Length: 185
Image 1 (tube, helix red, strand yellow):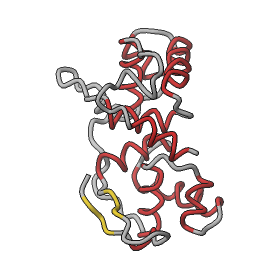
Image 2 (cartoon, helix red, strand yellow):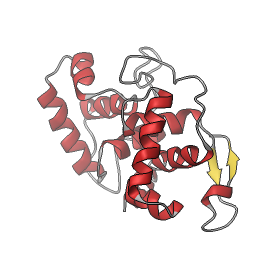
Image 3 (tube, rainbow, N blue to C red):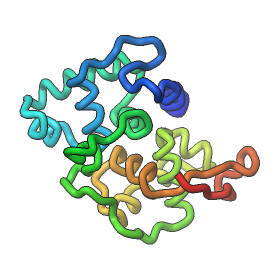
């Protein structure tokens, strides 16, 4: 379900304010979504836009309803794929800690790399565990290691990192997630 919601939401990439025939996002909602795509927390978004955290939460609720997205990670993926970063301010390029660049070259194991790719695809821990034929607890352990090695703070930042700095996978055969060919983003 998570993967389908992300795939459905990106089918309207030509019009970031519209998704699946739903209402248009307001300019402020689009800006909030852009900042979510930049990996900023609600607190950082509220400071950036000079609004309260409660207002940010209200905007996010409206964004989720209008786009059909299920969570913040899906919203970040949607924003990265459909809303261009503001070139004048660099908005959308910042991570939650204020850094504008991704960590340089973490040494992830091949399995951690697979998990990170699947997180970048919007998959839940349950779906990742099924795809890789491992337990959900093992997925959580891999994510913890990924967060430590990359310096990322949460799953949303990990998804953003995967989309920005890691090559995509092109499946060579169904069910062979660990043996896919890597292709550039």
